[in-house]
Image 1 (cartoon, rainbow, N blue to C red):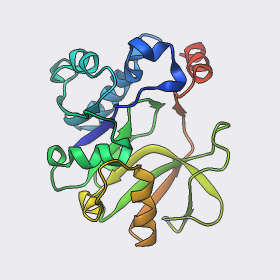
Image 2 (spheres, rainbow, N blue to C red):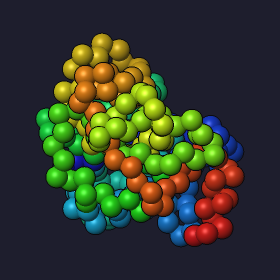
Image 3 (cartoon, one colour):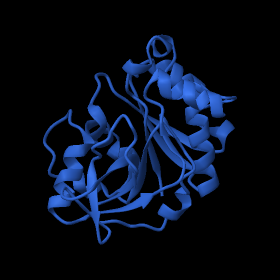
Image 4 (cartoon, one colour):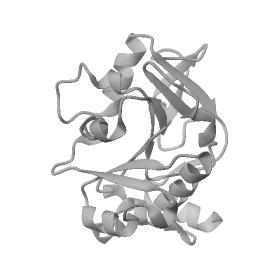
Length: 216
């Protein structure tokens, strides 16, 4: 299975750090966010990685290179303009192939066991959900008999999913959020999910970054 890391955003809420440093290259302790994910991907047996880049793209590509120093093969999808999460994946599909692929945001810090997702060959989407953090108390999606729903108690999307490329076939837009694709797959009843109660952090604000620096 290939993996795609979403790394094109500007990281506005982490300014001024992200004015000169791509968000995935911010360090927690002695390790950058993206290196932590690289290690998890490698340990899970994933070698082929696609990264979308836009903000400070050259810095990202210079740092990560071809992936060889991380034990990976890295390919880049360069966005001339920000395409949002869904549009970014759509542009990168030629690099991802015709099989299901893993997608993750490059700004999360978690101990989720990625290897448990490798055998999933989904028709639509399979999402990892977590308990709602303070900054997102209302959550995103419900979970009923392993199917995602827009009703009932909601959990937060962990920014970890396995997707099949066919779920993008009907999309005619260039710029759009991945949430629109998830809503469509839920309506088509081809969206499944699982709840994870382990360690998970979205490094989206300076407060969260400082909190993580204190426990690293």
